[in-house]
Image (cartoon, rainbow over all chains, first blue to last red; front, top):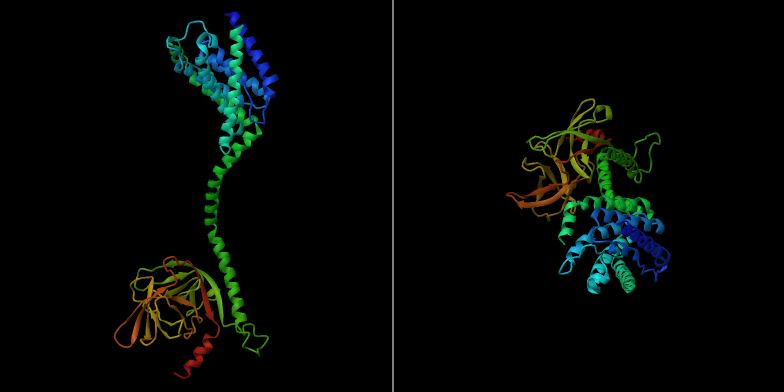
Length: 168
Length: 273
């Protein structure tokens, strides 16, 4: 228990540093900003209580907001992602359910399952984030383009990290 | 799977979610000047509509004062016109005579009592002897004939509108100048009858009817109304139905016209009758 808390804390710090130091500096023509820190919400164990998930999501978003100087923007998006995660897990559950004491990962449930799971949550998160950022509907399709481009990049990076984790 | 559903059921995470999401949006709206200004702007555009309505209502409530100001200004201007109009054809005049080239003078008034649905209608104006009103002065509303003053007290005067069988007015068809007598048949407050127009005269529906100025009460050329209908009725004369220009149902502000030379004209006419 203590061990896993320590492990997730380390992953959290690592992902945050990766996001802030590396991925925040990837801005391709102002359109594509991958936000891979959302991966932390993806890989939390199945047994985590919803309230804790929501609090962790809020904390992750809040820290991101502190570093990017946009109070509330990431928080709103991550809290929504944390809120929908249990529903997406139940919709997307494998035929024989989830095994006890596992966490969502590519190695346990396969690429297809993990990809669908990631795509859904990343899309929800990025849509909220980008529309909150522009905060108007005039550039609706431009914003949608940004959402799709950035989500694609985020998903690719998350899958790459998952492959690396499985390989280890 | 069952565990998961149990978790969903046991923890009412919706409340926590709404709380945290609300907190995030609160931070978003207060912490970012861009988002803040967007919200303020859209709220402004909502309240703008309400404020326009309030302002319109306020303007409406002030219409009374505005009307009074405009009426006073109209009177001042009409008096100036009255002074200027005859100056052209009066080459010699006493320079001490301040009204030598003015025939009509104007005063504004407000209707305080009015009736339209009786046979003999009257209306009361809030100006009287103290304001220079005397009997037999003309009352007009805007550009239309309204009535004649028939009695005055210190502060009020009673006028007989067109809507009274005793009201007789010398009126003519503006297009060709044929004149007749205008009266009211006691039926509809919107229409009056013009008689004594001979049948050989051409009358068209829509013709303008105006005053002649023969009675020395109304100035020449004040509009009475337009021809609404006409028929040949026995004898040699038309019975012309005139749609009155003045709406007596909404009559409120009027101008009272005095003729400075009326006594002179009537005195002269009396010598030969």
